[in-house]
Length: 234
Image (tube, rainbow, N blue to C red; front, side, top):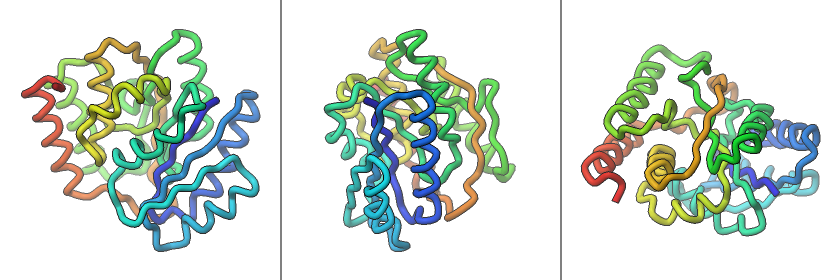
């Protein structure tokens, strides 16, 4: 079983499209799946739409009363993944191509990786991002790669396939509840000797809704990076 975890906040224009893409993907590769949507108090009807979609798709809908952060959402959703061998994490905004899931699965099956991440920076690409955002993202990843000393080409892309056993082992130790969760969990996994692979992906800027990236998340990313460098993930 593959569980797809999708955090949401005001993604009413995207969730039904995403559900259809996921259904098409898993039907094509003939593998069982379900979707966990974890919604942080959307005000645009996202949660209500997700509840309606439960009649058409294998969905578990979870609603929280306030915005608690991406990392917190992943940890919360993981409590409901005991019957899944694999967990796929992705964004709701369609910036990551759901059809690339089959490529992550293929690479994982071929090499028995514990984690496969989509990389935008090793033969992948980013489309329709402002120049400054590209510079910040690429710079943050290069800095993390240099300072942490682990050969991960994309620390910040959330599009990943995990063995559930890895997340159950690593997630309780991850201190970040926000965007920096992505960096911290993959760094800790590498340090603990888990097998990690990558697959190049093209990241498209969202077509509907607004970006949730705020300056505070950049601050917490920098703080988490510094902590990992100083204490080597302890």
